[in-house]
Amino acid sequence: MNVLIYLIPAALFLGALGLVAFLWSLRSGQYEDLDGAANRILIDDEEDP
Image 1: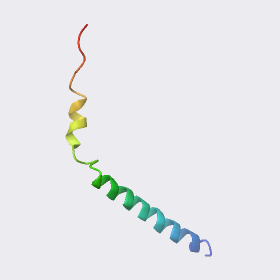
Image 2: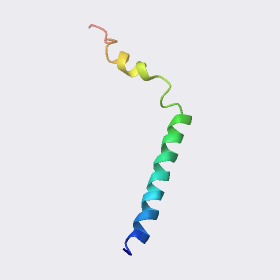
Image 3: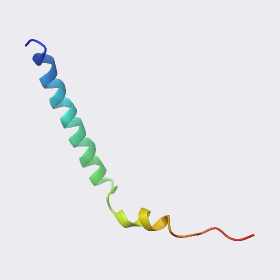
Image 4: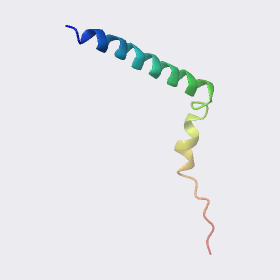
């Protein structure tokens, strides 16, 4: 039971860290263009020699 003294704050800290990382990714525009990467693979920009 004494191990819960360490595990509960560690779990809360990791959860808060994940939330902060998610909010940072929202603010930095990571989810702006969801279809761009999916369509970019289909476009052939190579020039024939």
